[in-house]
Structures are given as C-alpha cells and as structure tokens.
Length: 57
Image 1 (cartoon, one colour):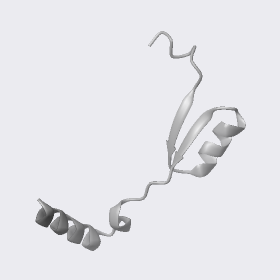
Image 2 (tube, helix red, strand yellow; image 1 turned 180 degrees about the vertical axis):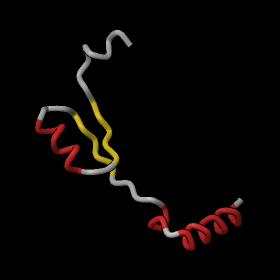
Image 3 (cartoon, one colour; image 1 turned 120 degrees about the vertical axis):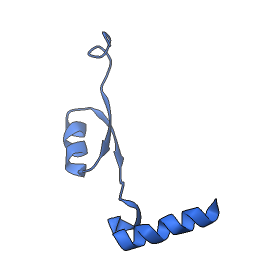
Image 4 (cartoon, one colour; image 1 turned 180 degrees about the horizontal axis):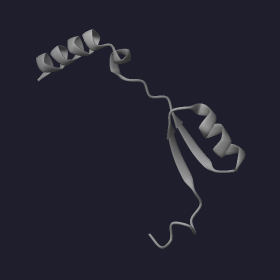
C-alpha cells in the first residue's frame, strides 16, 4: 500500500467513455470495457437465459 502513490496509475473503466477520455487526456493508462447487462437487463429475457443455463448443467 505504501507504493500506491509511487507507481503509474492504470485504470479499467466500466461505464462512461468520457471518463476514460479525460483520464487519457491526463496521460493515464486506461482500458475501456464496453459492458452491458446480459439480455439487455430485460427480466423476461434474463429468466430465459437462466433456464437455458440450467439445461446446460
């Protein structure tokens, strides 16, 4: 923990790309993750996915 401020900052950003862009503008190493909830977060589609996963076990 004592070396935390001494090493170059590296960030994984999950969310708004503008946040990653601002970090890049400040010469921070950034990896942008384009994550979306499974099935678009729609409950009825999530239920179907869960049933399919159960069949796969």
